[in-house]
Image (cartoon, rainbow, N blue to C red; front, side):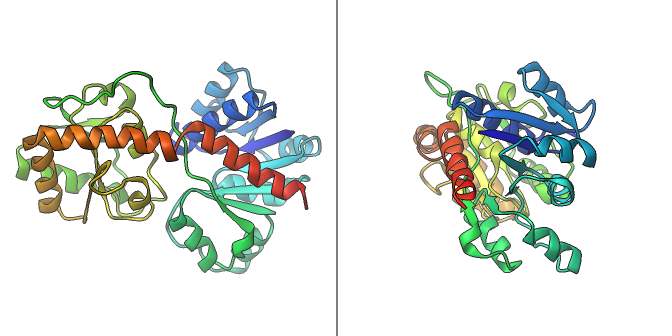
Length: 301
């Protein structure tokens, strides 16, 4: 099976990491993957370093390359638009965000074009249904993570880690206020894999979230998560099992931080639960098998 993947992201964020992870898994499963990406972008460089052929994110390369592909898989909004305009093979679109889809004639046409949608959570699936996408055209395939070997990264006396993001939807302001209230020092990380090694907890507060790939990364490393009851995060984190779910209230976030800091036995239990949950529900293998099942439904007609 030959798949043309399209992602036009300017940065190497969670969605771009998922594209690369999926392509690597599909290649191991015997598929041929070609990427359409921005010239000079970090995803393009990462894919080329992994030996994947890459084309420019423009209509003509998509038109030409899609004529030799079995499927086109668009991974972001602009990629969806470009593929809807230029793809000559059946189109699969991943939807990663939980905010509502705009209602317009152009949007209605764009969302009728794909043969199938892959939603990363039930929360995202519901938004697609509200936009008029038939339920039988939607598959739910959560993000995946590479599972590390050996014991988890959690340390009782380690730092509190949060995502370094100025996106107002990500709730950094609430985390900063919670840190002042709780007295906990927070590292706002731009290199999560490094900073989560030895962390006591990961605080992921968001006002809108499709699933939360950063939370899944922390869980895969055996770090307990404090996360918002927002969007797909409540599907990613099992409250009291792999982490603690909170409302987007600084005082409630602060209480959860103090709770984990003051109760190492609870934190250790949640750390173990986090790693077990990531392995059971969010492995790379499940990402690849779920995506391949969606592809086969398209090709079966």
